[in-house]
Image (cartoon, rainbow, N blue to C red):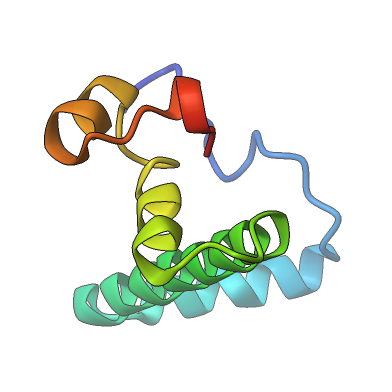
Length: 93
C-alpha cells in the first residue's frame, strides 16, 4: 500500500460511525464489477458537473468547444495542444 495515499481511516469524515460501518460493509460485499460500476457512475457525475460549469461560464460555446474544455480538465495542456490544437493557456478551461 502506498504510504502517501489516504486510507479510509485517515480521511476526515462527517458521517455517523454506524452509517459509515454500514457503508463499508456494503462496499466489502460488492463484486468487483459492482465496484467498477460505482466508480464509472461517480466519474460520469463529476464530468456532468464539470460540463454544467463549462456551460455556465461559456454559454455561447458550441458542442466541440464544450467537449474540448471538458477534456482539458483531465488531459495535460501539452497533449491538448498536440492532439486538438487547444491551448488552455490561451483560451482557458
